[in-house]
Each structure stands twice: as structure tokens, then as C-alpha cells.
Length: 206
Image (tube, rainbow, N blue to C red):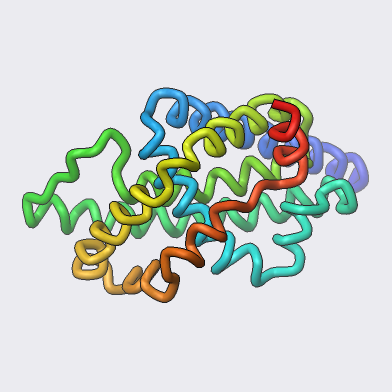
């Protein structure tokens, strides 16, 4: 009986991972398609910071991004769940910040708010990692990277806009203080140049 329960549990867990990945991929792709290049560039720039501060500091996370074909699907699935847990905490922090903004009657006039961009930036890596977990999102994840790459000419302006926003975010959420300050523009642009291998190969043929 235990063996049967284990099989059912694994199947349900796999099914939930695929469903979550499909949902994230569709949402991220829709946002990128519906917004201008500067918004896409800002999301790409924020994703580069997350990669430098989180993914590149973990051998397992870095391997999942760069060498997913050398990892088991179960390992990739566990990494996806780990990032989902981190993102859940970010969403809780976003709720607290929204309350502060509302209390101060501060509204951000942007189609995609700064905090939503931070969540979408993380979605880039979650879907990229998920690309090695299920083939059902492969084409859409590639399209995501094509859209991000197409916005790369706007990165300098995107970084400038993010630095302007940083001061406000630091005042309202000390936990996020100096999120970008330790990077100079040249370093930040260099980080933004990264492309996962599957996307790099496809972009070469375009």
C-alpha cells in the first residue's frame, strides 16, 4: 500500500509542478507581449540581479539553468519548488509594501509595478529551469527569451529608471535597501547579456 501511495503522491506532485509551470509561463509571456520594450528591459535587468545574487551563488541552481540536461527531472522539480517558496515570501512582502503605499496615498503610474516586475524577473528563472522539467513549455519559454533579447537595446534606460525607483523602495522597505547600489552600470549591463544555452542557440539562427 505504501508503494502505491508513493507513486500516487509523486504523480500528483509532478502534475502540480507542470500546471504551475504552464501558468507561470503563460502569464510571463502575456505580460512581455502586452508591454513595451522598456518594461521588458526593466524585467530583464531585475532578473539579472536576482541571478547574480541568488542563482550564481548556488551550484545546484546554476547547474539547473545551464546544464539541466545533466540533472534528473526530480532534482529540477525540487529546485523549482524551492524558488516557488522564495517567491511566496516575496509576495508576502509585496502585500506589506502595498499597504504602506496605500497608507501614504502613493500610486505607481505604470502598467507593471516595480514589485510585479521583481516577481516576473524571478519567473524568468523559474520558467527557464522548468524548461528542463517539461517539454510542454519549451516553445513558450524560448519565445520569452526572444522577447527579452529584443528589448536589450533599452537596457541603459531601464537601468536608469530602476535606479530612480530604488530610492523610493529603500525608504518604504528597508529590507530591500541598496538592491542595485553595489552594481555599477557596466557590471549590470554585463549581467544582462547572459542567455541560457537553448536560447543562445536559437537566437543565433534568427
